[in-house]
Length: 229
Image 1 (cartoon, rainbow, N blue to C red):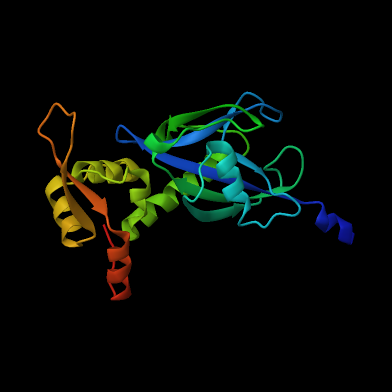
Image 2: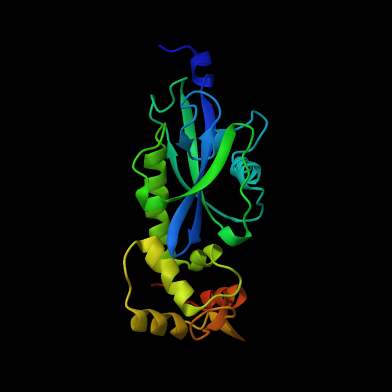
């Protein structure tokens, strides 16, 4: 029979999968680790939960330390607890993902990171610990969520074109979408507002700019509206 103290020798951590969109490519922010284990390898930004810290506060702290960002979308995805997932002992981690506008983000390395860098999500084949499994789980959850919740707009600037919206969904879902059907369905939901502005500084014909009207979305949702792509 195990002694009671054995059950209190377990650490908890949080790992943040921070998604961004650049040139129609879904990217994730990784840190180059400064310390062992896996020194100098690229990994997800994560850290142990402080003894006096609530679990829900930890990913917000880690996100702010790693990126300088606050008040961004966070979704808890899964808890990973394989006995041998950490080489230094039993560490159970809770994974969260975040959606950020890369153009408004200035990533900065935290104390345990040498540097930070954006990577194409679908080019990553291996990460230390079980971070590749965590990344895959978050990608799968994101792909499910963007189909039924308008969370993807967190990856876009405040004003965007319909082409930007389609590029976003194609990047997240990792497949092409029919332009005509996609636009028809999105515009029929009436959650995008024409801001009466056009693109500037483009070589092609400027496209209309839109905004996502979150208040209108919540109003429609209260009346039974279902967002589905």
